[in-house]
Length: 346
Image 1 (spheres, one colour):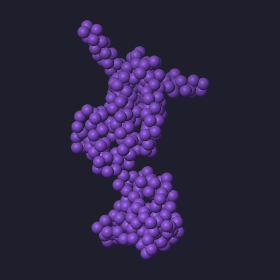
Image 2 (cartoon, one colour):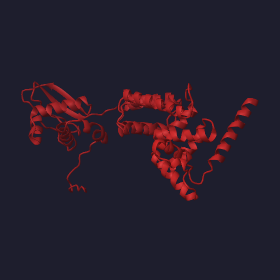
Image 3 (cartoon, one colour):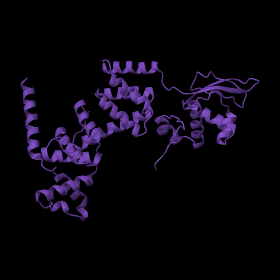
């Protein structure tokens, strides 16, 4: 659908965070009243009454008052109230461009409302100071802009950004590229509170141990380098657990050991080939067999009672086109053995 704006029709600016996070869960009537209030605030009107808003939108004055109270609780509006005066109307200095005055039908009148400034400059400066203390160094201008992006574009509260920094750094990830990726993932999942972020972090730690089980690793806490591998699979490659587990199983069968670097090479290849599911792995398997002129493994094509195991066999026999994984495994294992030998000598 193509939308055309009339010439000289004016424009009312609405933040994306309002549309993305507040509007879906709010009453349609309240949203209409909020939009009208923003239109009044941004059009240069310096005086408007609740009855006038009610007449314009065909609501009762009580509806308008309730909506304003709702948006005030959501920290979208700043309201100033005073005891009702005899003339029932208050005026606002015209120099205050984004302020509108309005009388309330009750014993108190709303003398002014403003689109709320969610975070002051002082709060932003404080957050930057906290981030620099976490990292132990000054933030670059681009990193400071990234923090502001979390607040303005992603709609994150200060305490959630603080927790985000603490969480990432506690996981030994100090790159703002990584921190930004986690923040965007939280935003996509609708995570807007510290408690929700904590639950997400607990789920991620559970995934670490699920991957470890697929590699045959037990009673072991992931090291920073191991977490870096697994975070890459979960965040950068964005692969589902079933695909990661297939790569882990293949690693054990090929190398006889839990080689995360070998698993990473498999998953990197699959990610480049657009793999998003176990079915995608099977399709790549078949394409590779056809390209190499080989027939699919007979046992892998069996159906019936052994169908599930046969399917798993096909996934495990898949080799990304053009890659000699046996040679890769040999190089990785030799490099690891050399490293261990040098470590023992030292």
